[in-house]
Length: 257
Image (tube, rainbow, N blue to C red; front, side):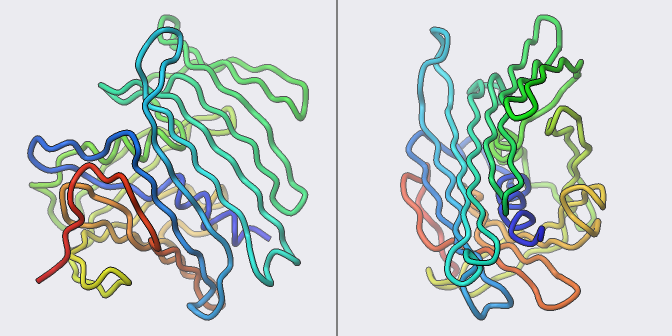
């Protein structure tokens, strides 16, 4: 069963946004919690993203941690317990160290990836399979740093159909990833009415997502550009992830008039 993985990885991989003017989009101390539900009827799980400033090898960097787990009835049928960690340079955003430890219904992975920019080589330690791999890369982001990298991109000139592309490093491979801008929209949330930018992530089908255009994202149209909602259309029903709590934003949360 890959439904929960789609939502959790979708949050960690594809909830992304764009910055405006010269305001900082995010800062250390940012914390976001999302609830996941099936067709809006029952809670399926929770995902949390947090960001801190720390030191790594004597350098000041950002440290991001993403966790996801199933809850309620779904937990009894398909237990998910995922942890993702990323250390990345603050300016420009680029990954230094990435950790992934997941357990999805008994399917487990435990890998650590180190990015060496002197040789443009990523060194992957696979603890489950007791295997080390090295992969040459050009410009890549890991599953978490991509979230923050894309938030820093300029959105002022976006037009319907515009796309932003990056290469994402995951599971010892580089995957192409695109975001297509669809429209602006005001939606109702637990925080009131919020102006949003609506995007559609385009990924290779058959990998994380079964369909290339199965997911839609709503991003707050303010200086924070916080992912506030995601919907994944399925063969039967749909899965949603919605922001239910936040703290430590770099800018005031802006609601529609």
